[in-house]
Length: 371
Ligand SMILES: *Cc1c(COP(=O)(O)O)cnc(C)c1O
Image (tube, rainbow, N blue to C red):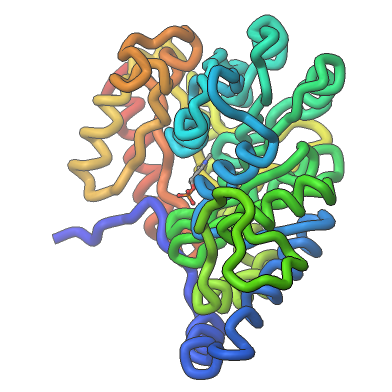
């Protein structure tokens, strides 16, 4: 039987094992926060931001950040229709309403002109999700935020390694969020990070993250507001510390894998891949192929071909508006159209060139067969 090619896999070396083992043996009592503090510091330095709070997930970081911005009952939050549910779920949990707008055809990220059209008196935030490592048009989004006095949130879960005009993804908005789920470029198994340069917002999230207990409160077990419990454990943070020492290498390898696909597939007509526009660097979390309508290649063709060849391919995110919980009817044509003729390609640190060659040859074959 042929070997399966997975679409992602974490890169775990002796360093991660060593730190996790140390945390399990010694990271208790007085030392129970050591790796967490170290991980937060390393992440702040990497991102060049003032504050970072390690969390149990990116979803949790978004939930607390939006709660701290005061988003609640009856409010609206604008985000791209092409998205993973994790960005929208916390909006619903807070009693607010997600407003889905269409994406740009080249970056597959939120279209700023549609954001401006969607603003109402109830809009409380705009979320910029850097899809698959591609960058949102941050200058335009931040200008809109400024013009209307609306915070811009960056969900950078997929964008470690991505840089926009010299600034790292996640460091430009009112706050940013990251995910260290096992499929992400940098992983702690499960985990996330809240980052910001806003001291007051940081204090609010810090209090929320500690079940509403304010820093400096001398009285024990004295929560003053209802908060959350989305903390990262010291053992997870230990793995994160090792990954942070290797972050440059983890990102470089993602870029190398992407470049190999790009070089091998660029000559085929009717395919586009993740863009890297001027003044940006793409972290290329998920190398993605979008087939032109003219090729007549569909998601179903792609899935079947990949499955038959033992390759784990991932479908491009469905528009959230097309999911049953949001009405079940796709409301944005570009978001709907792209997901019908696109696929994510396998990409992970230890992927061999032989495996990449197999993936490429299948795509080439598919093209010949189908057109
Ligand atoms: C993975 C992902 C999340 C969710 O991350 P968790 O850590 O699983 O909560 C949120 N947003 C985007 C864009 C993601 O890709």
